Structure formats: C-alpha cells, structure tokens
Amino acid sequence: MELRDLSDISMDEIVTAFQNAFSDYAVGFDRTQISRMLIRRGYVGKLSFAAFECGRIVAFTLTGIGEYSGVRSCYDCATGVSPEYRGRGLSRELLGMAMRRIRDCGVSRYVLEVLQSNDKAISLYYDHGFRIVRDYDCYNQSVEALRFTKITDPGLDIRSAGIEVVGKMASFCDFAPSWQNSLDSIVRGRENLIVNIARLSGTPVGYCVIDPDNGDIAQIAVSRNHRRQGIASSLLSSVMDYMHSPTMKALNIPTDGVSLKSFLEAVNFNKGLSQFEMHRDI
Image (cartoon, rainbow, N blue to C red):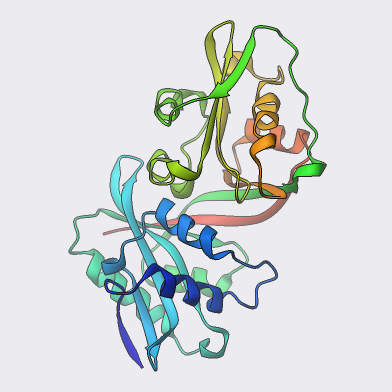
C-alpha cells in the first residue's frame, strides 16, 4: 500500500474514491455535486493525501485552504475509507501526513466538522490536538412540504443579484457562517449558486444564496428591523422555479442561532444531524 499526496490525481479519480468510501451510506452522492462541493470548500491536491492499493484510492483526507474568520486556514473537505479497508488506522495516518504538510504552507489554523455521534472520529481529532469550538444543527425538508408565507406588500421587490451583495449585507447575519457557507466558499462556487436580494421600498432588507441543484441554502438573512414580516419566506419562495433538487437543506446552523432556527422550523424544515466544529492551531 502506498500513501502520498493527490497533487497529480484527477478530480474524476477523487470523486470515484469518494463514492466508494461512502457507498454504504443511505443517501447516494452525485458525481457532479461532489466535485462542486470540493470546489466550494477550497480543495487543494498537494495538501490532500490518500492510501493507494493497486493504483486505486482506498482511503483519503481531502484538504481545502482559504480565509476563515479573518485567519488563513485549511479545512478538512472530506475524510473517507472504503468499507473493506476500515479499522486499519488509515485515517489517523493520513491525517498525520496532512498535518505535517500543512505546517509548511503558511496557514494558522486547521478547521473541520464532525458528526456529534461519531465518537471514533472525535477521539481521533482530540488525539491530534483539535478542540470543539461550535455546535451545529442541520435542517432539511422536501420542497413540496415547505410552507411559505409570502409577503403582499407592494413595496417588496425580490430579484437576482451579484455575489458582491453577500459581503455588503453580512451585518444582517446573527452569526459567522461555517466554512462551507462562508463568503469565500460562495465566491468559489458562484457559477452554480442563485443570489436573490429583497428590497422594501428600495431599501435592501434581506438576501439568500442557494444551490438549486442540491437544495443547499448557503446563506439567508434579513435585517433585524424587518424580521417576522414574511421576507425570509418570500426569499425562499422566490427560488422555487429554479430548483432542480426535490429537497432543501440548511447545514451548520449554530445551536444558539435562535432566529434562523425558528424561521426554518416555521416553514416546516426538520432538524436532522448535529455536528461539532473543531479547530487546531498550526
């Protein structure tokens, strides 16, 4: 078995390895969506490592790089092991290789997310010096089950906008987004995202950023002075004609993000899995 970085490995090979590693999951992974996910998360081949058996990737840790909360950081885009190779300590070995390479690339922090139910992975990350910094909840629902309350105010205007509005309206958010929902991530994935802005009598009062192909709500926020008026609901409703996914999801909502969580539950999203965000200073 050979362990090395992925600097010379094609995205097609990496996507195949991803599908193999998660082949026993209840939900399948579309190849196009996997590659888009890795682009949004800032994947860098030279900082990513895999175990090869007879030329085939059987385990991997994929690393991204970018700005996060004002700090040059790297991120665990995905770590996986093919079912028949689990229990051999490959994740631990690959993570160690990645950590050693990352120290030389000018970043100050390593960021990852892990399911709160995954005790083995959490133990592995603790052993490598990571600490929990945030608790997240994730939400999902079928599009047809969502219940929107559309505002009837004739002064409300919702239309598409450029990606630059996300940074300009960041003060509407109650919390800093997670890595995969950050402005850097949105900029990297902008070709496949819808950005809509809501104006009330000409004044910007809210916006949303959504991937219509997988239903991911990257960001949605409304000015504090205009909440509970149906604006967020109208924003979500405004993208329905562009949706290709039968479901919508809102990932990594901080457990103390009460306002957004209340909205998601009001339009009938279901709370799903919970995650920890973990950091390690480099």
